[in-house]
Length: 65
Image (tube, rainbow, N blue to C red; front, side):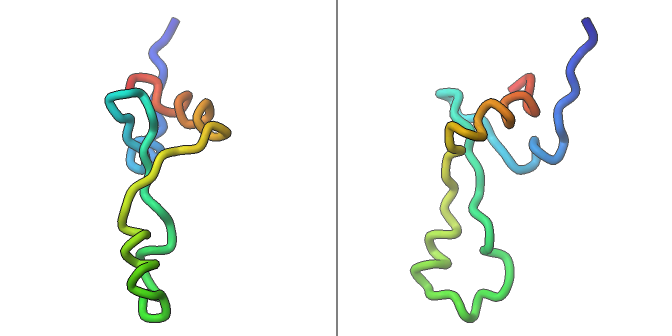
């Protein structure tokens, strides 16, 4: 069976933690920041984990991680 290719877009966006969970960064934190509150911008900086509905799909895109 041939090797599986890693989805390069997914590999740039997601990281697999030591426990096998998938980490992602939050959206809407790159521009138009003047209208957003400091609290909202601060919360957008932090990373979060992928939900269980998308987990299988993303895991298939990252076969060797």
